[in-house]
Length: 404
Ligand SMILES: C[S@@+](CC[C@H](N)C(=O)[O-])C[C@H]1O[C@@H](n2cnc3c(N)ncnc32)[C@H](O)[C@@H]1O
Image: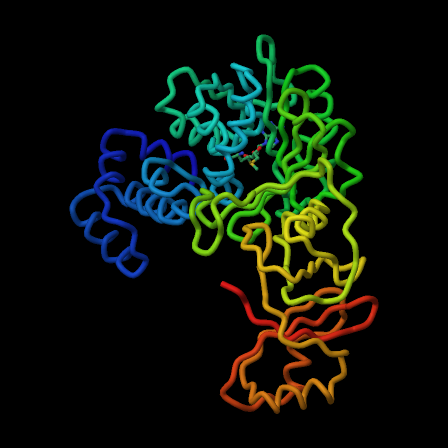
């Protein structure tokens, strides 16, 4: 997808062609392309329209039906914030009461669209010409939104009270950059902004080291459907009083509702405010595997408090309790057996149970699940789940059953 392809789509003929396409079907794309060319549409336009149609289909995973009215570049789609998470970003600025927000490095404009949806006046800045053109198109429904194609680190922010920065996290050669000090724009640039503007937010990779979170900022790790998608840093009016670390756990579509088995009254977010120091103790009737966002945020203690439980080991992020508590913050398993880890006795235990299909979960052990599976020489029709981990410093095996 290049600038001439996008330009061709932005003519009335191009847009009409794109809008007339049926839902994208990879198996039909070649035949459809031939038919459109035979009907007299220029080959370049057909190719651009089919590419866009494919990207829109892929974009549904992040934007749902909104994707059908958007334009994408492949990289822009990959880097874009899914709409449910962008809406959370925008909500912070709306709650902070800042009217004019600059989206510095706006990509195809997903965060800008969410900000505009929350009635913020958006200045979207993008240095890549093609991506800026796509953002302009995606922001067409909000006439107050302005897109500028320039270097965001040199943008004039006169009259702007807030900024959101979602840096590019790849080098020119395509290598991933996980350290926010090396993204574009950099963490230093954002800290500088936070010194001059009332409210600033920055998206970083979930693996950000805790010591890199600047003093006074709030770091919020977010997971969607079990995948930790980001750690957002919030400064000034967008940072919450008394919160330094938070974990927000969202279901696959990003909209917490009455997910089956989970009490809707359950928190989907925990913070470090008032976090107790979790105790360590014996494995109880239930094992809880905290969501990745909770673990990354270092808030396993909050899950322990919620389920009135304890850690199985001071260094391992498994919580155990004698109570079943349905929570979005952790996956619960009934504990059926606990034994020291020893290959021979584990093999015997699995034989006795006739286990032919085994799910192996592990934390805090060097054991390679696939190698172990071969060594166990499983036979039988039964299914089982085991957890390999340290319990009070000892390598152990827990036989568990998922509680749904
Ligand atoms: C991760 S993407 C932003 C995605 C966006 N938040 C969204 O949801 O669509 C980062 C973007 O910043 C742009 N960028 C990087 N450095 C920049 C700079 N100094 N000035 C302007 N844009 C920049 C890149 O071209 C890229 O499109």
